[in-house]
Amino acid sequence: MKIFLDTANVADIKEGASWGIVDGVTTNPSLVAKEGRDFKEVIKEITEIVDGPVSAEVISLKAEEMIEEAREVAKMHPNVIVKIPMTPDGLKAVSAVSKEGIKTNVTLVFSSNQALLAAKAGATYVSPFLGRLDDIGYEGMNLVREIVDIFDIYGIEAEVIAASIRHPLHVTEAALAGAHVATIPFNVLTQMAKHPLTDIGIDKFLKDWEATFGK
Ligand code: E4P
Image 1: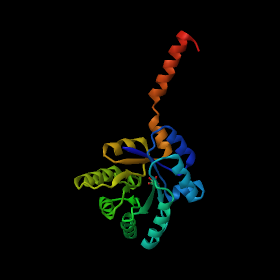
Image 2 (image 1 turned 135 degrees about the vertical axis):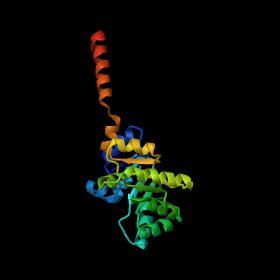
Image 3 (image 1 turned 60 degrees about the vertical axis):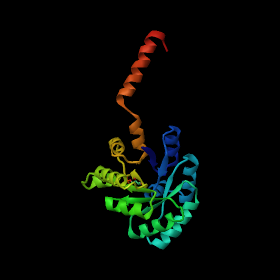
Image 4 (image 1 turned 90 degrees about the vertical axis):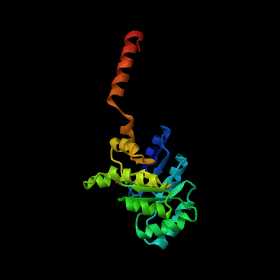
């Protein structure tokens, strides 16, 4: 499973990338707004740090405007994936720009039917938001599982990005569900790397070493 970082924070992306485990990045309008920086500037910086897909989202809601915006966004860098929301207008835009070779990530997917339509429209990635489903009392991971199964049955090439991940267990379960990608907030990535027994183990090794050989 590929690991994308779900953030527009350049410092966090630099740190994650330095671990050698970041395959790509996803951003969204909320994440970019949180940084309070120019959209194009942030995306450019991210593409300079990570040599992999970087999702940048359109703001327009009407198909024609989305198409224009998608073309602009795609021009930013060859690794930029245009994120388009899962609406009928979004589908029109995906189907138009995918024919031009523009790669897309259909976002805000909350049902298997939405995922199926997005893939049929030509999406490169579909992003089911599992955490937001959990928030309203549905098992978000079932959606990821269902979409992966459907795509497998029909040999659909679009990749499933497990999105809206809130904790390390989501990542493990997304991997077991066969998600192609998990897009992970930086704090969750940090939690994934840690285990109290690792810290206790290191402490004990060093104490034993020092007891025999000194500092
Ligand atoms: C995915 O691409 C989105 O940016 C993200 O996963 C949304 O997560 P949230 O529900 O935590 O905002």
